[in-house]
Amino acid sequence: MVSTEQLYQKFLECTGVSTDTRRITPGCLFVALKGDKFDGNQFVEQALASGARYALVDDADVAARESLAGSCLLVADALTALQDLARHHRQTFTFPVIGLTGSNGKTTTKELIAGVLSKKYRTYATVGNLNNHIGVPLTLLAINDQYEMAVVEMGANHQEEIELLCSIAQPTHGLITNVGKAHLEGFGGFEGVKKGKGELYDYLAQQGRTVFINSRDTILTALYRERLKTHRPETTFAEAIFYPGEPVELLQESPVVIYRDADGQEVMTHLPGRYNFENMLAALAIGDYFGVTSEDANRAIADYNPTNNRSQVVTKGTNTILLDAYNANPSSMAAAIRQFAAMPAAHKAVILGDMYELGNESEAEHASLGKLIAEGKFDRVILAGKDIKYALSYLPKAFYFPDKFSLHNWLMDHPMTDTHILVKGSRGMSLESVIPFI
Figure: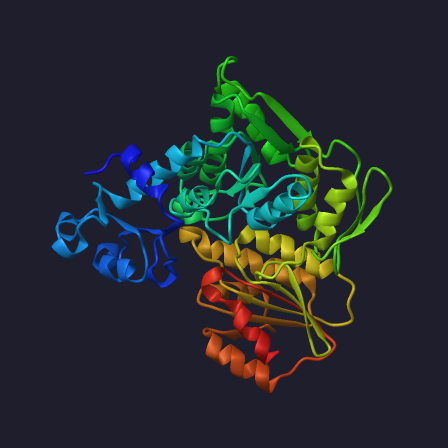
């Protein structure tokens, strides 16, 4: 079996890393991971035939095949080896690595921070949603010495996952966007979410690193104080940057955010909602800390236009659609619905789907969602999914569909015009599919 150091020398010969035979690039390292329904070891020959230079395997029989001699790197466990390889590679970085987690807004905040920092530094940021125990190692292994800064998004659906990701990414600076009701099933409730996300603060304190904290978020400031009490004085943060340090005024939150910075400059963005304004404040604070001018930071935020089903504003005929269908949990749903309810518009409709991974809390949380929707007094309420039916007790006039096929047909038969429409649901609902039918 190969050691981590031996594996790293082979990695340096490669052009990149892939875990998917459909995305093999010439000269890459193929990592044969196992899943519930697949075993990457079975696809080693295909990966090598497609151009992979080496295959990282944990099946001794595959490694022993004469036809694969010299191409297989045998380890005890491919996933652990991938994580160890990334950890080893991370130790070669001499530049700041910003670790980012939170219940909501991680990806948008990551994109905003990366955009701001890129005005001054060659910055690498997590691509897409590669933020878990596989994605974070792949992110780190994609970073080379041409970069001067890295922004690494870290997601989690259970406790101790952020702890693991921190041990791999080893952030020098960190930010929690917020703590909300997300992945309640895996975390074991809201207190479990706080503990899990707080693992980033734990790591930064233990390593004497820098933390950025939204001073207007009472949960985060309380979490910071808890960590100060938990850790010994000699193992605490290098510094805590509370933002916003300079006054930044929210002038408008819908249909898109407009803010005025400390210099009096008004900035129009492509993102709606007060919750996205909070994400912008984080990017401005980090940019200021690293010496990005306010003019450049504002330009980066103004130029960011989401194209990933997150806070997208889509025009379809005479309708304006707020497409926020990448994910949903009780916290993000509440923020989106309240913001949409406050938006000035002659006609408003919501198309909402199930919130996943709520476990035993699902019925109660969907029922609470129904009450919140009712308070919004929307012209049309359209619901789809299995558990969102629990919202109907507060919504006697809502249109409900247990599946998206029925929803699509109904939308075609009941066209809307001159209407602002919020579309939001968990990733598994893929509610962006409704757009062609509106």
